[in-house]
Image (cartoon, rainbow, N blue to C red; front, side, top):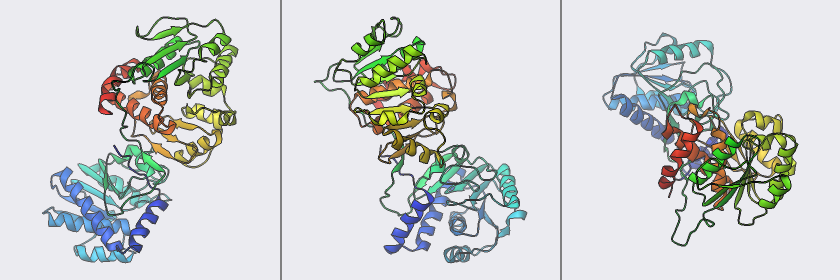
Length: 465
């Protein structure tokens, strides 16, 4: 699948200005947006009576067009507004609607609510009376639609500026915005529909992570060409076993656990015992190794630090997770000197210890971290973000809440290792791993434990071939 681009408010303005300069009018873009909103609302609500809330700007103009289109479809539709339109295009749309417009504060609810109050670019909270009216009308509706982004959300960083209802559907105009995928805003958006309003090919360094295309093994492949992975074990052997098992099920041809006590996991898993860190270093010197995974269950003592040093010195592509990140806290620049690529997979706490306080949106923070360490960084969470030092960034579709369970991060590290061992670009490898991880969680269901993710990976690989 082709990743869908994500545009900030500034990026969206630039895209609109480009098509306007090429001859498309603002009114035409508004017509396309309103028609798309009407089609979505009608399709999901079965033509139930609707109330469209219109703000003063062009987002409100989209609402007037949507109301007119719904009326043409035979829907009993009403409009409520915050006041008179303030832009030329919105005034033209309101005139074309031609129907009455109730005051928002006095509006009576309808089964379908369409929020066109404020869209992309909002930087301040809604006025209390507007926020209260939106909450009241949304609570009384059976189906709610937000246009572009729910009113009260900051589109660039996903912050909630004032209370925002949970919408059933959000129609993103032209492109996804960061708030559609970043929390807490993403939890308010419901089903996402991206409406094509004629902006053409969109250039953006940010995109939504999509299903990867992974080459299936061919007749010339064997266990070494499919990827050799070494998982460095430590004080918690179960974590290393989870990572190793995940790497196997994610398609790696040969996986070993290095330095563990031996035993456990699938029979096909190789255990290479090592008496000391020097022995670990010797085992990791095997040039057939396509990727090393270090961190799951490693520990944070002197022995763990020596094992991490051995893994970093092996000069192989490496996934750095969990305890390994904590052992590198405050030493991000050390990773910039590695000759082989690395992928870091911290959660928020580990990220803060590693990189300190970084301002901006989650995308901004991860980009800055990737630039500082010169490596690909995955900031895990319900809205996982990947960034590469060259500025590329991607956001994963919202992860199931039940991934908040012990060991699921170890599984992600193993999957990431399998992708990296394929020889895939580190950024693309991290994106592929996140997609597989999230889809495995959806397939496993709410009662999952980390082991269940591993069991679902094999079937998902078939969908990516």
